[in-house]
Length: 471
Image (cartoon, one colour):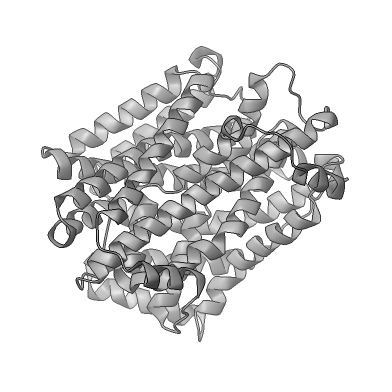
């Protein structure tokens, strides 16, 4: 059946690609949040064009694992947490969802802080005031605008990402060298370089993306009265799987393309000018001005704000979907606030606690390190669980994964589990120790060094976890 569906999906049919765009596009675009921008900026500043190839390399794997997440929602009519609740022990469900909630809150705080810093860079004034304004705007829209309208707004916000394309063309780029480094990997057995590869890989795959896309597929399902979970309406499968594939791969393509342009811009300007340390997206924007002019700075900072307005509601929403489904609460952005009090309370809590982090002595960048730790703990187990769920006829009925998705999905899972430990030659402990020494030596390297080192450590932890099959 899986092979037949793949064949049906590949037949040339008259499709409306614009109508197909939805959860996959928003999910991919939200991956380029201010925290991700900081990682890509640091990669370009530190290593020039040498890491551009990683974004081409990760694209098919990122697309495949997100397609798996989308299929869970569309086939079963439930999100990831809803399926974990049905087929796995409660302790595993609550552990995964609890870690997701904590990591998302910290990420929200870091992203809001970056947006406030970017607004200060453009307008002057107090960054904390802008941070609070962005938090309340995001929260108000997510709570009071129904999903069928809010989804359209999020799709329009994805256009903010293309600011980084404009920024790249506003500076001098050696396009031949950049394109060569994109298609021809230039591996260097240097701890910093290898660790940055791990950081880029970890940035492109985050658990909140899985939960958001699966649950918004369920939201899309509820928008059309004639649509049913594919387990109960198999005749809808070819059209829906085509839509999911087009939406997901285009969304992930946009995500990696924008990341490529961010890395390209900082490589062509900051790295070329000898500035190789970037601690935040706002610092990257400020650093661009003396080497590329005020227009490039303006574009970069404006992009941080636009991407943050897209990412913050996705982070808060994915946490609410996860915890709400785990607790069997009514969930969904289409529901009125009074009809889903628990769901919207989680969104409000996540956003406001993330905002509060910026008003405490807690360093948002240091907090982001721990968010990376938690994401590293959660990502690989969730990927394994997703692959087990979608390989089980009890969960998916006749729509278990095709060979193509099984190969790519397990390859992505294995790679994210195994690659960091291989790249930490001669061993993971040496890589981690290296970055801990850097922390002791220079506090201002915290964002660049420790996050990478800690991400490495916790990817290694996840590789030892053993998870049961869906039962």
